[in-house]
Length: 313
Length: 270
Image (cartoon, rainbow over all chains, first blue to last red; front, side, top):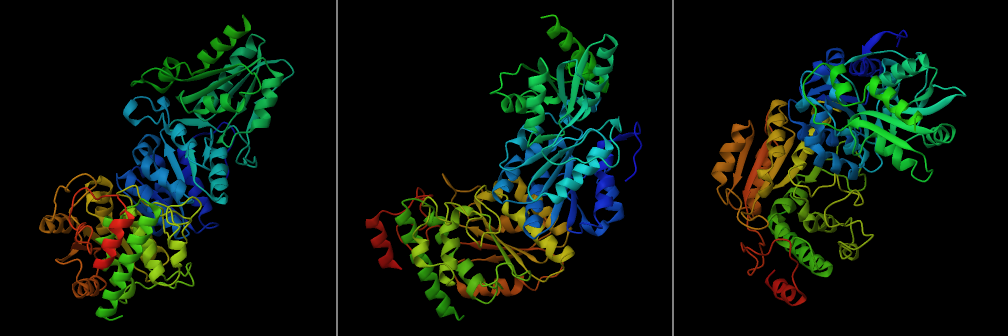
């Protein structure tokens, strides 16, 4: 694994790279995909280890059932399709929690940031769906390094895991040796003068970092936290941020209900912290990724506006 | 085991199904009764290879009760095999009992929890893929399906994929008892149409005209285990509530346990 900071790579591609890298160390890995492997990048694995890849075609319910069977025979299935299409297999996912399986679900093309393809392809309910599963782990990496590390953490963790990947390329922000334990988070920007904390993950984290730079020019400082582990949550870091800054703004490319923002709200409900949740609240449509992020008010401009709004109060 | 012994065992399993559900006060005795001969023959007719003392043995055959509501039958088979006690069977559906309403992982012989219909065949495909292509172990995967769940699209998703991967180690047993929860199924007893549809998905099909004839079922299993390059579906015409005259082929008995009074009448008929 060798990424350089600033290098552009989609987290979905880093997922494919990770599988290829990890298989020799974890030969129980089996990869399934719902005939989207050249989009989810499961095809990188399929080309390298064809005997351990099984095409499931466009039949997601069956794919989850097959994964249950493989998991119960001691394999570690990594199963991928667009995040949106796992929703039609929710009954099977629901039963997998009772089967106490060890399935790694990987949903790509999450959020409105996929752009032009429009709402039918946008995963906007997936975080809610996987958060609700008993004992599940929900991970949402933002760059190549964190994706590769979280894929490996998923292998080491016995249980059902959901990993959300992004279509768009994003810059690498972490060093190759950075560690990403499940249940952790990363404080990426921090100072004594932080007025607020922006908590984000995935594509929205890059919007938060851009907002940080914009605010800094006006001499306004915010804390930025990468909440790559949405379940379990890093409660300690969140509490600390809530104590040390005036308010928390969560940003996510997912519907408000059941997403990262609600997870943070629930976790901090006893602290009295002020929390503002930026999420997809309007009916999405086709357009350029940045146009959609701005339209849904989860882009850097919207974050900056929200900070200003609160400072002036 | 010989046919006459299997017949005796089938009676015993019926006794277990009826007494345990009446004790529990709920459950699905009629859906269990239709598949008694099918599963007793599988278990004790020399087909199901399973080391009951070593559940984790990699060569063990796998059995998935996709029609999870037939759990009284599922548990009774293990009582008949001598690995679950009669006392334990009578804890069916009680809080804290591993014998839950539908099979759960609390019961040591459950492969996956079932009861949400239409899912078991997919799980079977996963297990068969593992046996054939990954572990390369010669076990068979048996899936007991209800006829009502054939309306679920996911069953047909599994069906297509199983033939694509030539899973001749996967054997489905379709219990065509005609009746669903509230009415007759779309195809009723039309096993010819089931056969056509399933064959068209690339499966070998074997129709068992009398799903309570141990000899006929035995012949079907003998043929099924020899199939090359194709998954096999045994399509068996059965009678819901079989063995109890006032339950047989009757609507209105789905998911109902017998009263103590009716149980007494039923047991006399066995």
